[in-house]
Length: 223
Image (cartoon, rainbow, N blue to C red; front, side, top):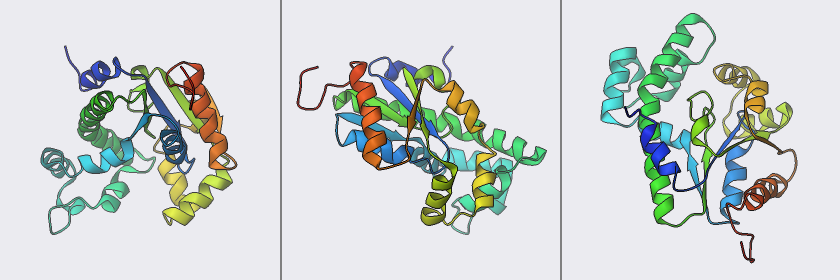
């Protein structure tokens, strides 16, 4: 019997899929993108795909049925801030709402990830980096040959989300409480990369990891 993850698993069998996880503001996207500029590696941004899933007619219909008209604007588009208020938190209502959101949205994201992996295969990428904050929570762990945890000091992460997203410390905490504890994510990962200085420092760690496993060729050199 096929599940929502089956297409992604079938596509993954043709190319190494490396999951990249970390706390909010850890810089995992920047690290993954750095690697993609130094090796023939594709990057899939699962957060972006999640936003795109909210534009799907079928997804919007299910979300309207579950959460009502109040999460939509006058043009029929989902107001992500209003949806976030319903699902981010630790009380029972938030937890149930978040599970329902994931039940509706995750299959659409999985299908799009599978499509992008197939594109990466066609474009002859040597590996794919799956930048997915909720990779472990979504049950995509077994689809990856390797899961990498980007470790960044809490102070640096807070500075980044304040500068780039305008979040307060309380908002950062509220968002992170909706995900697995960072210590659990770290423990469930196969490799920890420290990202506490220049981007190149963390990027080179990840690139070297791919080279050592013979997943990508060394720059300017034979495999």
